[in-house]
Length: 292
Image (cartoon, rainbow, N blue to C red; front, side, top):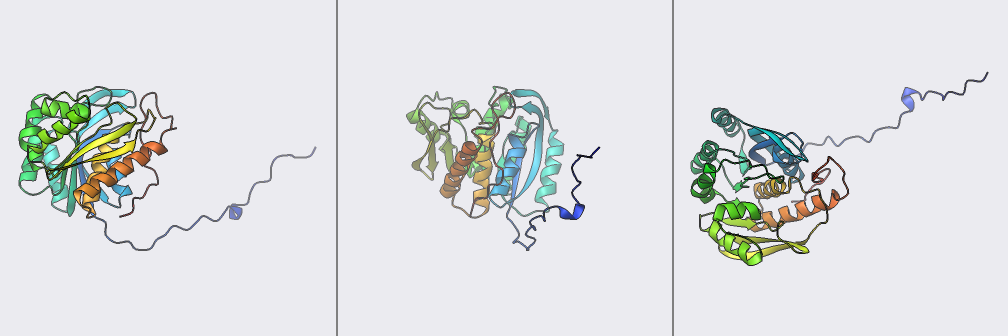
């Protein structure tokens, strides 16, 4: 009987792999994310590090909370003790030359105060504040008392603040149903002392995703086609991290915000057909390099 089994391929017959480029590269700018961990990988620190890398930055982290989370929602939040967060922050800042910082989930009044104190001491350059208040699936991620600390202590020290519509409503107490309301909310937030305010318009109705940008008193709009996709998990984290990365590599604030908008739009377009999980899926950050 003839043996019909396939002939094994000799080990030396494997295709030659494409050699990796091992050329030395310039030292990258260092960015820092002070935020929570998303076990599902779509938002939080995980998204921030991917955005930093896309912009050519070396990302560092301070973990403020560990969430049990996936595309369907948040099932548990473990807030890291303030003393541990403080030690993480010191470990990074005492050694690495951080040039831009992004904050995400801060969770408690004490953590907001810790970050505000570090910013007031000049230790958090080019601070981008993403006021993470509620998850996309409706889970509250910030204790109510901490909202006042954001407005009174942290926003005045921010270079850029990037709330979405629900977050801007909480921070300003203003109902936002359209573009004019978003403009008014941006003015309210600029009144705290923040240099640049971006009220993201993804939650507003319409065929376009229009963000209101108020930079040093001058207003303009960032307008992009709305991407028809359920995969929007991590858009806010990604936008703020990309903005910080743009600042880190030397972009002017308005240019950094515009580049972040383009990056998020691209990530949404690329992931439009993804099927990861049973809820709103993540963005596609994979393999993107944003030229500086």
